[in-house]
Image (tube, rainbow, N blue to C red; front, side, top):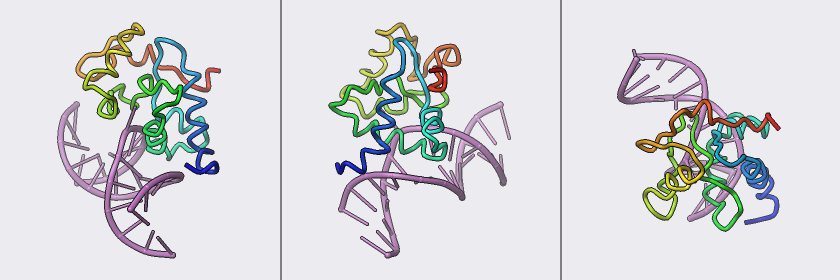
Amino acid sequence: MKPETLNFFDKVYQVARQIPYGRVTSYGAIAKYLGAPRSARMVGYAMNNSSGKDVPAHRVVNRKGLLTGKHHFDGTNLMQQLLESEGVTVVNNQIQDFENLFWDPASL
DNA sequence: GCCATGACAGTTT
DNA sequence: AAAACTGCCATGG
């Protein structure tokens, strides 16, 4: 990865790191916070490259609270396990009470 | 430099 | 209301 490329990704990583314990956020929320509400897909793309980083990708889900990125984790239910380990209830790859657990980066 | 892909989101049928 | 389609933007080939 080139240093310039990290520009966008790094921003995503920084925001993702700000996600409090037991909280979740959506790609669109992060993208919007970064000033690129249309680049929600890029956020997920960045997460894919977050391997080896301190980025809690398991706390980032789509706007519906669905664990769309669970496929990118090692196991099949690893992402769900991590969330449940933080006190987040997940059923059928979907976060329960998502609206209540939702964390907006603008809340900083 | 153009074509294809993707962990989303919003709009339309 | 549910499902399908398109738009968007950055990355990789």
